[in-house]
Length: 526
Image 1 (cartoon, one colour):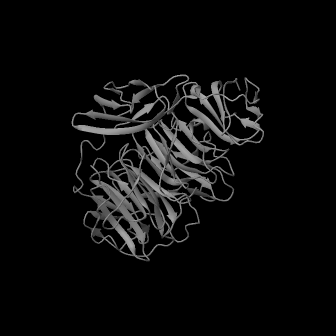
Image 2: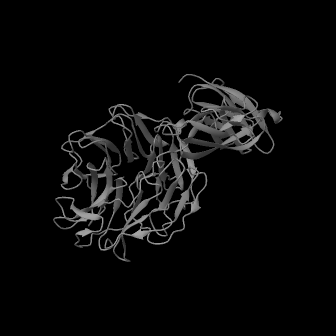
Image 3: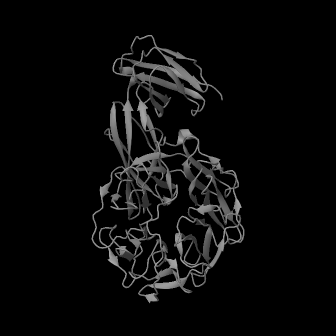
């Protein structure tokens, strides 16, 4: 879903060199082209996308690119998408290679397009289909030249997410069973995502963040305090530490230091601008924000070195609308503006005021074999360390009194309850903590009802029939054999759709205030 733009026009201001920021010519052929999205590959190579600052709903597919630190910018139109399409963002691998999600603003649908010649030609990668009318690609990201993921709004009943291991020649859609179900009316937002190592997050308009720790292969859900129905940016500087900010009034802002398990209102002093913000790579906790509200006015560039709590403005940068910001490292970054004159549209930061922190990139993280286990079958949970770079000590607390110093331990739970798992991992002087939860149930301890409930067929393929509930609204759950909840639904007598579940053995649980049924269900080959 396209991002809401609140600043619909470009005001004409002139400027030159201000402190650490140098004005550059973005070199768009048309006046009032604003910078929609920035991606620095390194301190010299930067790609950007543009939008029409005078008529933001006149969607365009134009890009700007530099390979000399912005001293010269080359611009162009994405071939084949000059009319009828808008762009969501851009991700680049080098000076020649970049990917852009584009969407058709009249009929719906879209594509991931790629260039390998510096933007001269663009080719659609057709295996990421994003079919009309619901297809709408929001985000694309690559960890290297081959491994990447892309995300679009729900299409066919669940979020349209793809992964690739060959640069996008072949995109494989993530199965719905590996993505939490979206709620009614939920969608993603163009360019709103964050990546740390193999972990990626994207935000939605329904207070949710979707998270994957394995390059987009499987996903979990984080609920935030942002008001449902509002779009919000998400930025993590480590696996545990992040900031979210609503992109319209009242611009509610929250921080987390446990990977999103808990969020607290971020109270701050100074100007935390509303258009965009980013973490400065390699620093302890430095952030930069930009603003473009020329009406109030509330525009400029500011920085915080304490996680967003205290902000300082860069002098003389409040006379220009700044739309987006991104840093390549602690000494160089860019802020996109409007191209109004022959030598403006972009600003480059050069300086040494943001101190490098050798531990800033170290993060603790882990995955686990199940979030819910059933003592009727097994209470064992296997934990896999994902900390990095190069951890060499681990201290695990499993929440039930158990502990371990192994890198990849297992723990067997014996009592029903909810347990917080804590990992403290370290590499030399660098250490970090990660958290998760395990829920332990025991269905064997509940007496089963003798009601005449019929469940058929078994084995089943795409659906099962449940009869005998006599109109009583019941919770129906399917667990994998290791106790992981795979499907949950409320229903009365009728058919349960199990088409999304892969073949295998499951435990079917049906419960309400009066009955509890537990039965083994086999889903056959499809």
